[in-house]
Length: 400
Image 1 (cartoon, rainbow, N blue to C red):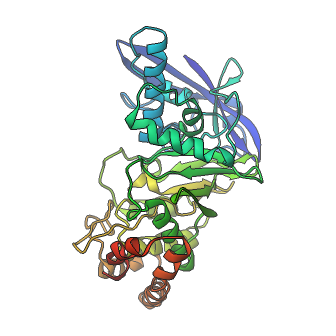
Image 2 (image 1 turned 30 degrees about the horizontal axis):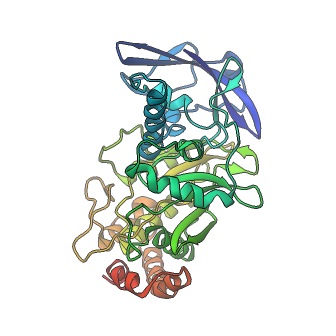
Image 3 (image 1 turned 30 degrees about the vertical axis):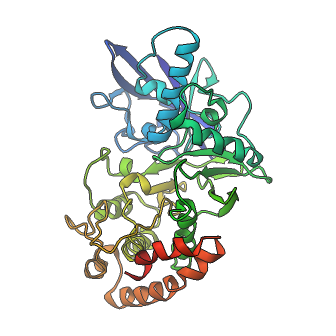
């Protein structure tokens, strides 16, 4: 299969090259060739760290997709939706379910909601257009109901949820929706058996609100409740109205693999080499590490960090997927703060501050400011409609 690849630069789709996929006996190989006009375009940039701006066909490593293309594909939740759709269609057609390849996941994603600015075309048709568009916010009760049914009933048609959620990653149920102003949003849902004490989406909102007061950039968010269950709405930061902004995950930036162990210093090094404003972004990266330690955000893997292209280089995207983790025991981040230590230790963050362009005196001022801001966590939680029982349950995150 051949797919034409474009990327939006300044709101205009610019041809980038051709993606080739070939499968044999269930194994798939992937290659790519830049368009000669793109290589000569003064605004051109390498769309993926593993795709240098050179002519000729470039081969992906065995069994894998190129890094930046993987960022446009679904992660665990979206893949499970597409697998469910294949299983449902196979039952209707009285056939055996197909084994989905990486190219199937790539082409199965909604073109409207696909992450970043890369787009994929087959015979001049976008892969894959939504027949009904992204649902409006009014559809949240239906989407929540379908998300609840995902694990409990494998026979129902989850068409609405699949179309709205297949482009999105992570393990938790979510979907793309548009608000009343037609802005593209991500809706994060509670799990079907989640208790009101857990109230995970509401606590993510608390974390984002506190992060904002700690001089950390976050997306615009809003919390809604349906039958007291919290749904978190986040504005897409890879969109500027209908314009698409190139996006690269932290994992792709360092050319890592899922499940690998890495250091935040690798993100700092990427910003030093490829960033347009490292003097601003590297210290903010340090602030995010400190904040994660202070609230016990232990789900800080490399896909939960990202970068946006601003015509001159990559910039740290707004922070996302920040979740406090309850418990009094020693906590560990998913990435090392120095070269190999991932202890969620404030002392370690302070010790390494100069690696991240932060002076020791500035580090102490930042710590004091963050402590003062986080001290208001209970009032922020109450403003999000969180119950007293849940506040008590999460106390160790903020006062441990």
